Length: 112
Length: 116
Image 1 (cartoon, rainbow over the protein chains, first blue to last red):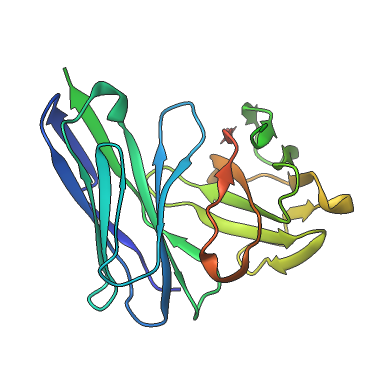
Image 2: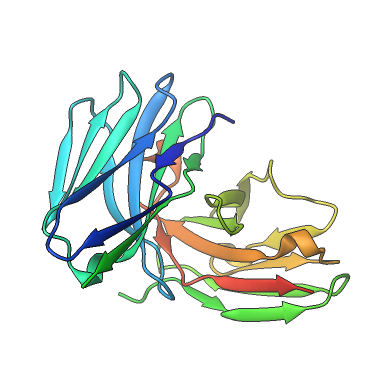
């Protein structure tokens, strides 16, 4: 099973600043890329499911882009707020694996 | 709409003991997943059910782990006997369908297992 890598592992950001982090995945046999947010003591929740190269999705202050040819996705948060503190997980579905392969996540901490 | 329910939320056991986790997915969701998430790693799929049939259990350590989904609704994951390396968060998720990875998964809050 091929790996999905996320960077950085953790990130401290001042409240009000914007930030972004990366998910790298195998580009061969790519089918879908998922982003999830996991707040402490809560359930992981889906942010985006992306399939098309060049796709960009947005939910409030959070947006994501997808490059399937080079195998990466960026997640952007504009004007970070304390409630954005969470671990952000990405997962790639490839037709060679027939399951989601998950990255280890980026832990985001917003400093007031 | 009620979310995915899991119990217990926390469990501490000694090695070689047995433990069972329960999951009730969102009503109408055909696909149910059990993941193991070890600290510092991404979730690893243990088993995937489509209704009450197993789709993928290739990463389930079958010598000690078992899972069932009777009647295609709720599910139980069991570890017998537990080892220290089984300490992890066990996540249950469900989706409308599991085919081709385009359906978002809905997660329960997880069970944090500590094996001492």
